[in-house]
Length: 302
Image (cartoon, rainbow, N blue to C red; front, top):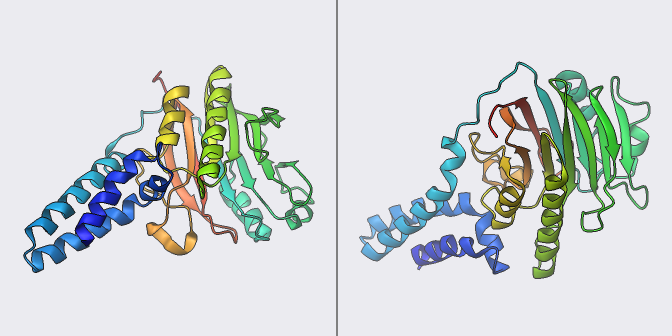
């Protein structure tokens, strides 16, 4: 029964673009993979042929989905120039802005996007961290997004597309004398069928934004979708973007207490003329989300 349930859930995950309940299954690929190993060993011990076969089905299905994240190689960079972009969803937690200041001084990202901060963060950003400008969208009851922008950031704007979430921001970052256009956003969590549709509509709006841009671009944030989610893959395909996760494995960002068994719902997608030279998770700053840090370089691939 356990083997059959694991296999059924693993196969159900492929229907996440059709059935809301499949969204849960597709988010749990890592746990389903580990579960199929445990169930398979148990089936061997009790000499259940059906159990072994079903566990192998579940193991194979989830391995096929997850292995490319580890085996795909990012394209080689064509320049020594690098761009470091990071974001974290604070989920309205008060958090630790002193820790943010310390990390800014230590890692010097070109841009740090803070999604859903608490109102108390507005006081903490004064004075501005050295070398950074602060841009805020939304003030009451809480700010929706804060951008800590380094010296290479310009053309900061708040998209007026009503289909994009209110927690979204767009800006340019110079890389190798070329502006990289960036859209950062926080989509709805697909906790109900209606919220799933909202999330999908917001991802579709992000795709429209990306298709309108000329030159290199990034789409990043808490997209509430895993790298193997049908909704996220639709965004990648429709806007011709590449997921930075490929080549760096499953990097869980939520919830922090789950560690490596958590879900990778924070993403960064990039156009084909860019490549990734480093991708890691970072501090949570007091949130239930770990931050995501991605280093970008120019690439000759189109």
